[in-house]
Image 1: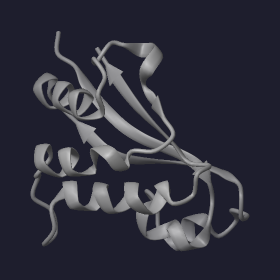
Image 2 (image 1 turned 90 degrees about the vertical axis):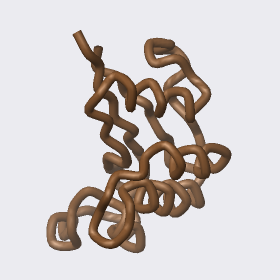
Image 3 (image 1 turned 180 degrees about the vertical axis):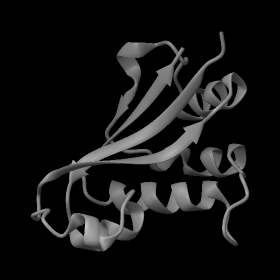
Image 4 (image 1 turned 90 degrees about the horizontal axis):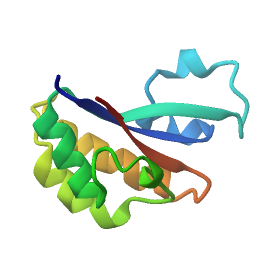
Length: 117
């Protein structure tokens, strides 16, 4: 059986962060500043990609006690290099790195590598 994985972020809602969240402004119309929200940053659909993401984060895929991070700035370059999926004029990696950078500025956001094996 293969593995897939996601990198998610969890933190307090701030209207300025909407470009880096999963949904558009209309979907957050009832959200209040500080409400806890979740967003997906990277989705890996293969075992190889899931393992590469874990490696970029400095963990083993099934090292479940080490999958929560307070910040990811040290891995941004690695993420960009490993996940160069084509997107709308920009790569998915560039969008993920941009979102990680924006969310990391607020120290209350945490990031979670979530494998599904």
